[in-house]
Length: 284
Image 1 (tube, helix red, strand yellow):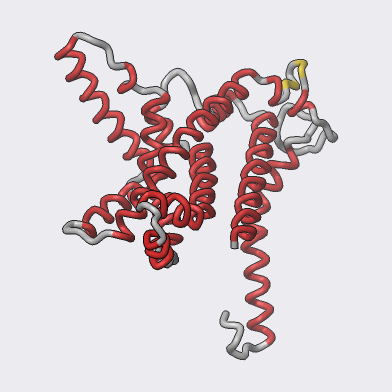
Image 2: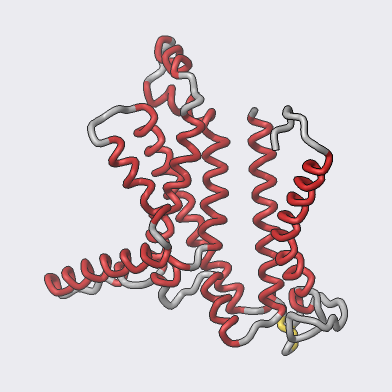
């Protein structure tokens, strides 16, 4: 609906009803998950047995809370470790990619840009299988040639980080490139005329301008790393990130402790998003 175009009252009410139903459809499943995280029952379903925080802080079976569930805490630590590495690599490479695609023209630039976008198109399962087969073939070849073991090329955290990095970097590149396109190169030229080096001008002028986009890319990278399942499932080893650990627990039977974990993830994700928005407004 275009606000400047006159609309009938019936059309306006239909549009408002559609918007209300759409957001209800999005929010209702999350609301149900959050509510049943406090249900005093071993099953995350009706009937409602009463309010409890045992699924967060409980210490006695069957009410073992998430803060006392060792497997869940270990999985959260593993996911945090992977997310920090993925975010750091994605932001660093994404920033370099942004300068490459925005500042330079070269033969094959369009083709290289399409290659950079491919991880967004390829399904996560296919991407994970491709990385696994490729790394396993390299490991087999190196082991046959040298007689040494190359465990880093086998399923494990290294491959999980590389697998998530392969597609998260694309998002970081797009976000930072969009910000860099708004930058006025004359500011760098002024700094160079005043005696600054090329790197100094970029470090003191360009990178502070890109900081909101860099921070937003880091937040998105962390969130995407935490929630990724398809690619991670194909590359995981003995140390399981949170999504894989939750999937394993779900196969054993759903309990409200998974609802409690989901609620915590929703709160952390919302908090990071709000912090990113506040920071970007302050920078503007």
